[in-house]
Amino acid sequence: MARIRLGVVAVVVSAMVVLAACSGNAQNNSDSSGPADTLRVATDTPPDPWDPALATPQDVNMLYYQGPYEFLVNTDDSGKLVPGLATSWESTPTSLTLHLRDGVKFSDGTTFDAAAVKANLEHQLKDGIPPNQAKFFNVKSMDVVSPTELKINLAHPTPQLIYNLSRQQGMMASPQALKNPKQLATEPVGTGPWLLDAATTVPNSKYVFKANPNYWNKSAQGVKTIEIYYIPDQQARANALLTHKVDYAALDFQFADQVKAAGMNVQDVPSFPYYLQIMDRNGTIIPAFKDKRVRLAMAYAIDQKSFFDVTMNGYGVETNQWTIPGQYGFNPDYKGLGYNLDKAKELMKEAGVSHLEFSIPSYGPFDAYNTAIAGFLAKIGITMKLVPAETGNIAAEAASGKYPAAIVPAHEVHPQDVYNTRISVYGPANPFKVPSPDIDKVMQQVTGVSPAADEPAYQKMAALASEDGIIIPLGVVSCLQAWDPQRVTGVTKWWWTCGNTRFDGMKVN
Image (cartoon, rainbow, N blue to C red; front, side, top):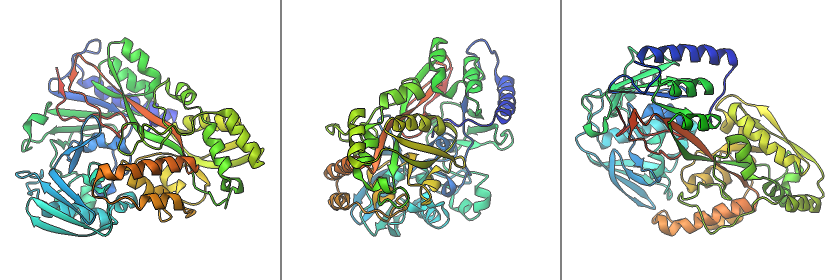
């Protein structure tokens, strides 16, 4: 999730309120002192509803969720899957079996077991928002084999399911709380190491979490209290860190040098692939998009290095594929299309297209990114207009069928989800139902048995998606996290979560 800019009046008022709250907690604004055993965090996004089934793909929200909730599966600093509430798992083409941690209880005293996991996944299927429901469409049934073993039976191979269980879809709420979803939306009840303190929390301003006294892993609770301040204004958030009113902050690129010069640590986290998806490849709205040469010309026209230099102060990762370098499904040997303006102009000339115009949905911080992309396309005679979309609603607008293309921040953590969502004729983000027979044929090779054996098919899919002009990579957007090293230790990278860190193991001095 990129950093969101709001209206000036709202930002100023919100920042003043939050900073006043921070000031009340800080012991000294001119040094690194602060309240003992309290980690103070500043971010730019308020939380979604606390019901896991209503959690949107906005990865920034996971900063909040990790307090009261835990995930069935976790990821390490490299993005590799590691145990969470599930200690191990086995996948076959027809099932996923989870072996669960014993001796864990929800904060309401309910036992965490296989029946609880089944209840949560059924809740996602029945009551979840569409992006969450879609992750479980292949689930036929679930068998509680024992209190610590759940077998999920699948209609089709679903190798991405275990990866999705490391995201919002894998957060576990108490089965008792699931019986009252309305209350769960405002009062989280999970197995997590910290509990939301409703008495001191101020919605849309300050969220306070206290250590769970009955948490199963005491070593993870490096602090007794976590305070998360919602500060949407970029400058105000950077100032809060620089004046030691907070210890850790999500940082905008423009403040990185200033924050480093003040002695703070700044960490660059490759967070999400950013790409232009051409959906109207049948030419329903834009006839020229039916011509592959036009789509490839658009790919050759994008100068990713200049894009990052102009919009992100040089942060970001160039890539010729939809995915993050080093991620499962990425092919380091694939050379891709690359920036070649002369080639782009040549292809447009061959296609007989001197000018075309199309629109995409856009909002907030993405406007600056997308305006830069429009500048590259203008050099080959293509005008890309930005149509204001509701904040956080790019995915729904892109899938509406009103737009021939869209620039999207990808939230799919597995290549199978990219295919299912954006390339398959049945995919919700393929609104014009354009078939891709060459990719379909490659994807038939996926067995769902061995990730290593399946990876070449996913790598080929990524290459074909680029070479057919379905997905035009724009690079991997980085998110920055910054913290006071005199106060904070144990900061980690949390891939795909836009500069978040796991609170597990963090400590304050």
